[in-house]
Image 1 (cartoon, rainbow, N blue to C red):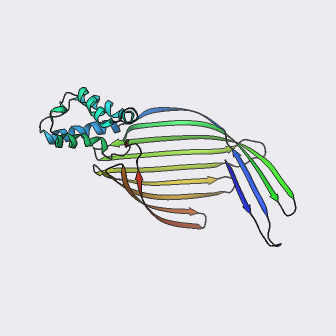
Image 2 (tube, helix red, strand yellow):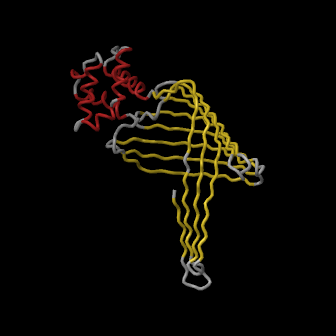
Image 3 (cartoon, one colour):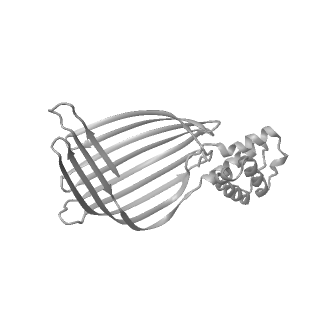
Length: 292
């Protein structure tokens, strides 16, 4: 990563100088984990397809094998946009051949209602849990150069540091229904410089929980609360952060969505405390209409 800082003056009391820095951070990591945390968004879509099918024809529903076939087909949805000029037509033709229900016999209105499942905004759905322990080595190299054009002097230096970075993390996610998902994560990290002339260490912890709620097929919210703590042995100090964020996303036809978010963060550092309340809103345009 390169960075530059240049300041120019037209008065003798000003300093005309340039600062240039370059950073290079190669990193290697190994780890071991246990558990299974799967992306079940395609299965959520298959269940929503079954839900809409029952609304059109009460008593008719997809069998267990149909749900598996439909979910497998939804995993291929993104590839159809890259392969065909009319991806939706080919996608649903193949879907019709994979499940026992004959979609071709439906009228146009019912068929559009059913196929709109692929455009629903479900968020990223995961199911299961996983844990892992990792150990990494980060080699940091930084080059700095300072130039003073008034005096013609130039100062440059190269600094290096090797940091040992072990960490442990765990994740859990559960879909309570087609509309609700709860998730939690925890992480602990330890940073220890091991190069000559370096001392001190840094510990970090982070805990968070999240609730995703699909209000309608095009409107969902994601609320997250978390706590993190960073402490340094060299400075004998710690920084505590408490945060809460709510995001709202409304998907409009033709690949456009509106979003808004509210974030609150409280920082506690020694004798210093800070509170922040941030608001944001915007418009997203999806080049590829694969929303999972």
